[in-house]
Figure 1 (tube, rainbow, N blue to C red):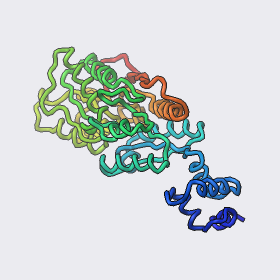
Figure 2 (cartoon, rainbow, N blue to C red):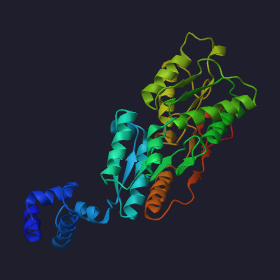
Figure 3 (cartoon, rainbow, N blue to C red):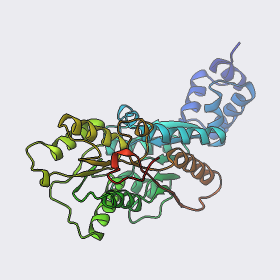
Figure 4 (cartoon, helix red, strand yellow):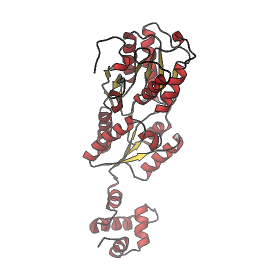
Length: 345
């Protein structure tokens, strides 16, 4: 027969309502009474046992993952599925749970995360997509709560796991230039994200090194979805443009965007890679099976998630060491950017 609040109350010599107040952290309960009730919960194996244990030990064995978007939007981007896989695998190995945090606004996100800390539901959080002037990062720093960022925070040295997005984007665009493409446009995600800012900088660096100016209207940043990629592709490749006024290559900051760009190119009868070079970012599963197969930048997303979880949990248990970790990026050349021969993967 399962142990109930009434059983705990009888053993402790208090009312069932007092036991409930202990569980909710009601400050009207005296400290000796609280300690006696919690000890009896442990002795009797009261369920939910995890709650009682967390109140006794001040530990929840739970970390939060802040998605900075709705779950539906996050799951539509393969990057997040891979990242969650790495985080949960490491958390499971370290006997921790993962709580997904999503919201409709940055203000709501900040309040939600702070409430989780203050109610001791999480011991730390992983912030999966930092923004420029991010209020959540600022609040976590001020409160002194443990957290790790996937990416980087400009002007701050907070614990993070990242790849060098500036160098990786530069590498991708330089490859297009080396293949003989000269009119290169850029399609990216939200301009408010640090990762978008960094990849855009890498794109600009590669063109500047070759003495090529960024053309007006050739950088389109909105969100990392296939539909956004299609909309950007339709705008950049519209049939009304003269051949010389149309991009002959596009750097997409996410493979999901590249899929949309390729679809719009096909609608207009533009051949890839003969008339349009295309390169993406992340090396999603679909990249190698597209037609033509997509050139991309491969980053170890699963490993980034695993390292972030490991860093956070070690930081909670001991102290943060090696605050900033950079994982390597690799250029994967496939058919979509092969104007010149000699590349394959």
